[in-house]
Length: 276
Image (cartoon, rainbow, N blue to C red; front, side, top):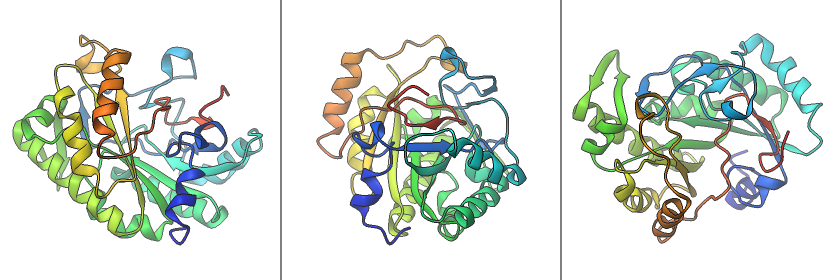
């Protein structure tokens, strides 16, 4: 699928194009249980789909690789719109779970015409880029929230890399170095990249434009997501609509913006712009 034009790969992916968001369907496969990072805004849990559980890091259950074929077939049969994308977005870190790659190989064999998409914190992208390409991954979403290690240290409690646990500014330095390196490597490999950035008032709000500038040479689109106050950031406030609009306007000077993100669950499916 990497041979498809960038334009075609964008306009038929509902999370990369503002119009496609209302036209095409996607399926998230909740196969990745473990995570290598502790984000201070994250609260992963397993629960049924309810209005207050519509957010990343949530799934009803983990789907095992041997269940993937039937799971996808059953969901596609329930979606009236064209399903263009099969993605893995957690509920943990996809690239930290071998089940991600097992599942990608299964769906690539069964549905070679569909886009294969992975949402990641970016730390392991450079290390696993060859596997991503060999599994047919066409789209990658990397969450990048800062340009300064000191800011990243406020957003992440720790990261595990190479068997070692990092905290503080040392973790911030490692995370940012690996994320930006992964972004460059993915773009070089022909994968279409979207960058998610969580707007956190008082933490990274003054760095949003700097992130946009830094990613603009390699990412196709940027998605600025308002903080959902959870976990260690449960006492923080959600940014206002005006603050989000200003951040998008500032970032839009450097890179196109995606405006319709639903902050979907790890087991979401259907057309994002419509109720399922």
